[in-house]
Length: 291
Image 1 (tube, rainbow, N blue to C red):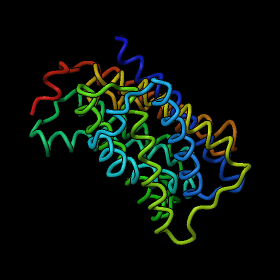
Image 2 (cartoon, one colour):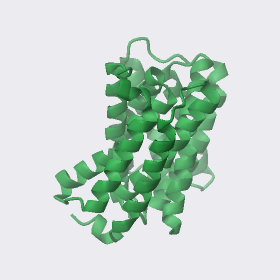
Image 3 (cartoon, rainbow, N blue to C red):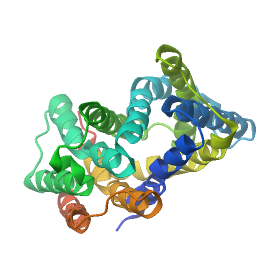
Image 4 (cartoon, rainbow, N blue to C red):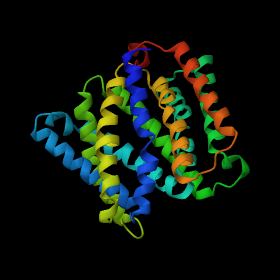
């Protein structure tokens, strides 16, 4: 296993705690948009301090491509995922988020005219099967339509962030790119909060959860992921990141008494098999980014 793929797996392990920290923030009185605004406020402050300390490059943080990535793709991704967690719970929201590998294949087919090979298709099917199994109640029709829409929207935009970032990371320093995205996301979060009914509710009690999400999940994990993405093809990275899904459902069961059924083991096995199949046809980095 190469170092780049290990970095993606490490980022995914950190991402698996997003739902847990988010749920704790809700229990502390923050609304979904309140958590998003609080998280990005702390993240933006961390970016400013990082630039001042010389940890991040100001030119990369201010690059217009980073701004577009943050406001055009990450803002709807984060917003949809926060509402999905609120409507569906940690496990099911994460399951729908990880329709992402299928979306990546669709983007590559539509934008690059690149047809997926049999191994990539098989890995995607197994990932989707694992996501459905891990979702549990999804098969019994208990997921509300609104929650389903939020979950699928989060998956589509999450895949778009991976696809776009893979094309940017070769020319931009990964840590500064990650920090810049998180800083500009504050503007997107504030705009969404201003337009949404009820706005954003933030309490002092939810700030520790927001700080954890900002510093560990927003900064550290994305630095790891973007460094890994420099050497891993986008679809392979999206499949590898499904480690988050397995761990998210486990956290939901352990900490929030969310349902644990026999489908969990089957879903985890399907995702493990997807990892093996996705690695069978890993293209070269140059081929993966060819127009």
